Image 1 (tube, rainbow, N blue to C red):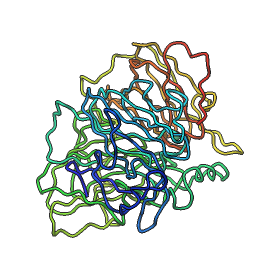
Image 2: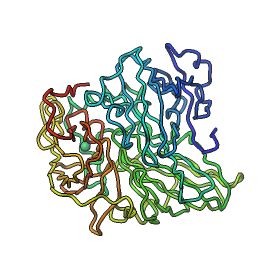
Image 3: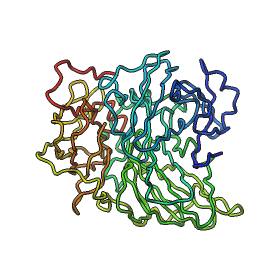
Length: 481
Ligand SMILES: [Cu+2]
């Protein structure tokens, strides 16, 4: 079931303090906006709690927001205010990070940087303005928690939306292991006690694609064998908002029988470019427009280099045969979007940089597990980039490892340098193995911000630095979760 905007979530069985929801069938869907929640004064409640999700007939223990997978869609208008009260019914401390939003520092949900993590039984009120329209998401920023169900879409609408379309569909991608054979913490522990896994490879990612072959890959909380269906009419123009909430998986996305016109990268508009497929890394988002043919079409998201897939159906004809999740989608082999294709709109270009700093992405193998480093440092004694308010700095990221890294900066969007000049505005960018990539960052949002790899395993194995304003604070930040 879907709401008027095509956002689909699944209702979970929720145990513990939120037991009332347990009577709702696990496979029943719920309206995503406000459904099942009680409004906090002037806002909404976002309740993090344990629950059970049924995937392919298996009841799996997980943690989620409001008993929904993904969590409820939060919508706002650019320039408006989001109010959300986190209620922590989990057995661990948690936070909510509003990924990609140029947010006031205290609301960033970054434990040890912007707040103390919220303890079990406590609440935290997030109140912030959203300056930029676009496709964003929210997720826990404590440990491996976001590899459970603790994520959901955050859509900021443009009051002067330049594109017109008949429908808008959110496609939230995830790699799922929670409750199948342990959880993400178990996977991290296992990774730290077994040799480095180099069996998963991808040409487009330049080598090792990831660490873990996941049992499921999901579109909006549904597996490929029990897919969701987006319904529209032939000739409809549809905006897809694709969000990669996975921990360790890049997805290659195509819509069978169609080309896609990419209009936004990480929420920010770009000059529209038409392609057959694109690869979206963890933390990245792409919006694309498509005019639908008559029929039923596979929306395919291949787990890049992992021989698995997330899958949904786009249907415009009731009688058309449902495509198979194992069918061939030739578009996946055709023209692939590259960062070189993306050009930011003139209004979004940043002032030129006054200086350049280098950040080297590194890797060391240790007896206790892998260490992923920034300028040779780990999260507990992190790399610290210092900037002055108002300056623009160029960061050269030099990937000195055998693996790609989706690097994410909190509180800012940067501009990626491409050979054609000023590339897209983004907040998460994939740096390929043994390559360099340059970004310009305009320092216009004071605070001490996380700058880290959005591969959750790398983040937890040290790949976390600080992007901060002015002189370094004297008191060392507690980076331990
Ligand atoms: Cu990484």
